[in-house]
Amino acid sequence: MTPTPRTFLKRVILRNYKSIGHCDVPLRAQTYLVGANASGKSNFVDALHLVRDALNGSLDNAINERGGLNEVRRRSSGHPTHFGVRLEFELAGGQCGHYAFNIGALKDRGYEVFAEECIVGGIGRGPFYRIERGKLHDCSESSFPAITSDRLALVAASGLAVFRPVFDALSSMGFYNLDPKLMRELQKPQEGRLLKPAGENIASVLGHLERVGSEQTAIIQDYLQTVVPTVQGVQRVQFGPMETLEFRQEMAGANHPWRFLAQNMSDGTLRALGVLVALFQANRDYAPSLVGIEEPETALHPAASSALREALSRASENTQIIVTSHSPDLLDDPNIPADSFLVVASEGGETRIAPLDEASRDVLRRHLFSPGELLRLNQLAPDRQVLAEQQARQTELFGNLAR
Image (tube, rainbow, N blue to C red; front, side):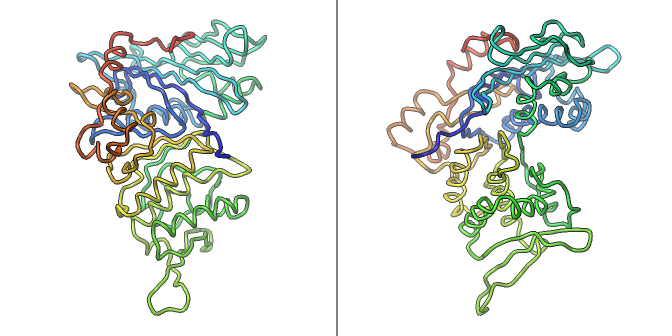
């Protein structure tokens, strides 16, 4: 029996985040964000990444790493705006709920969390809290930790057992824009449970998987050989206080594979390995709730697209996957469901995001064209009715919302 794909984030609502004025979209176990360069695909993923960074570090660092509040919030008609995020989720135990916050500027050039809300199971049916400008407004629990208006309260609330699963799931999302240069360099041994965004700890992650995730290691090695047929395997190796990757590569006329360090491998090989490690890093000790990958096809030969597409699909059976892409080759499969796509377009300097329009969906349902063929023809179009509804509705971030 085919496993039921797991979907952690069910719905994402964004307000005034970078180029995104507003969006309200569903996510699937595997979601492809498609659209032209500079349309705003990365900004959608980055909003989720900011949540993860703010929970694992601090809200201040997460905003400053993106250039400060003025670079994060969208300006409307020249005026600064608040930005907000609402994430509707289903936890591993089957509990549904949402987490939302709204952040705005103060007169002294600082910022504060104007409102924050976490509800699991619904008010009256499960734990919840509501915070307004650093003060607890309502809560299901008899006690609540101290909070301040410049931090997300969920970090403090994670000390309460009822909110810990929400914190763990949101903080274990992984987002990747892999950098072969960093993957090529000697790396300091690090905690290897979760691959870092650019792949800068990939040797530690592979070493960790070699110890606790032999099945995942085998899957990674098999797909890597499919994508790069001359590569026979890869492993972590130590050099004094540092570590790197060692590849075994087939060479013409040699009886045994030759060994090459990461510094001698191509960008395409390193990126392919990074994508595969991101997809299959889950193991008995730790598993990301969601993996987002920016343009996984970059630097890969088009012939590798089929194997990469299969790897994405297989990984989505256990971990929710979000992919940004504008590659027709990656999407050249008529069996990719129409519901797997969100189309991203830039209109008047604003990013608009919606599912496929009915005409595109009908073509895919009838297998007249593959998604990749429609992309080549510039015929993967957003549903204009959904965009109009988003514009008219301007969905609120808080409370129980209608679908």
